[in-house]
Structure formats: C-alpha cells, structure tokens
Image (tube, rainbow, N blue to C red):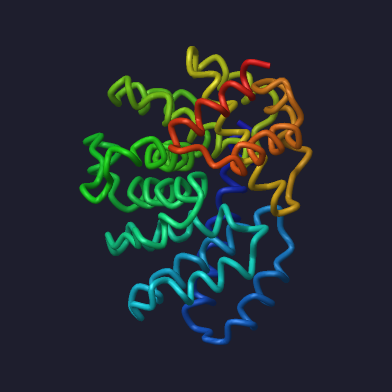
Length: 281
C-alpha cells in the first residue's frame, strides 16, 4: 500500500509540473524567460516541465504554420531534455491530428518514435473510450508507428491504474496478443520514470509480465537514457535495472545512446538491437 501511495504522489507531482509549464508557455511570449523558468525547476522530474512547454509551443508552431521553426528553436536550445520535448510534440500532434512529416523525417528514428509515444499517451488519456476500452488506435496513426504509439498507451495504463499491477495486467491482457510486447515496454518506461515502487513492486512486475519481462527491461533502458541525458538519474530505480537488465542505469543508458547514434533504418530494428544488447548479455 505504501508503494502505491508513493507512486500516486509522484504522478501528482509530474502532472502539476506538466500543467504549470504548459500554462507558463501559453501566457509568456518571451522565449528566453521561458527557458530560464524551466531551468530553474529543481526536481527529478524537471524534464516533464520541458515536455509540457513543448506541447504548447508545438501547438503554436502549427497555428503559425512556420514549418516547426519556433518549436525547433526551443528543442535545440534544450538538448539534454530532448526525449521529453519530443514526447511533448506528440501531445500537440495528437491534439490537432496534424503531423509535420517533413520535419519528423529529418530526425533520427529514436526521436521520431518519441513523438508517436507522446501521441499514444495523449490518446490513452483523452480518448480513453476508443484506445483503452475499445482497444482501437486513432485513425491518424499508421502501422509503421504502431509500436511507438503503444509504448505511450502502455505508459498511460500505468498512470491510469496508479501503479496497480493486477489492474495493469488485466487491461493489457484485454488487448490483442500482438500488442502486448509494446504495452509492457510502456509499463517498464512508466514504472522506472515515475518511481516510488520499491524492490517488491519491481519483482511483482517481472512476475506479472511473464514472457514479456524483457520488454520491461527495454522500456526501462530508454528511461535510463533520457534521465542520463538530462543528468537526472536517481538511485531509487537502480533496483529495477539490476533486476530486469542485470545492469546499472548508466550502463543501460549508454547502450541506448550507442544504438541511437547508429540510427537504424527502422524503429523495429532499433528495438531488436536494443533487446540484443540489453537482454542477451
């Protein structure tokens, strides 16, 4: 019970950071002041604030029809928070169902995937009837991005059940079997980013995921990468990396980074290389 209380508390902090940053970006037009404001936030979840602002600036870029120039300036000014910033763009894409294809095609495979991950989370939150209850993806998502999209949906499931493993497992089992791997990767991402779990919760997740335990490890590794990039790795979730990856968080982060640099030809290939390096060594 204490573990679930900690998880819910962390989720509340994350939600507040996102909403506050979104509102600040909406009401303040001074770009430099926005960056100073976000940089001043002292939290292990600081990157979430950059995600919230990213959503708002993404919407503004769509309204201005500026070929993502203003959003791109924001993204390039904050490289250590890039993962969360691309997730935030996914929120904007999902809200408008407007896809900046030319711009996305200029990004590496990993960062492209984060936009669709953000779309999945948004739709799981705001289009719950369609995505979680009817188990349908929204029509703007194409098959090449299904895995990334379901990562976001898996993350949303963890938030939706506030860390209740039995409920998360029940929801996932209601989806077609070919979506389970991606959804469990999303659970691994959310559990290690949010934290508040404790060793027993991570062990229980391993048991609940059954044959998808490796997917927890892959999801967790991507979170290690984003937290390492932002200099926000925490000791609290090291237990998960030891249990699932047999590695430290920093070691997992370095593996993801090395594959991102190689920029595989597809996200499916990215995941295959990640599984080979994270789970088979």
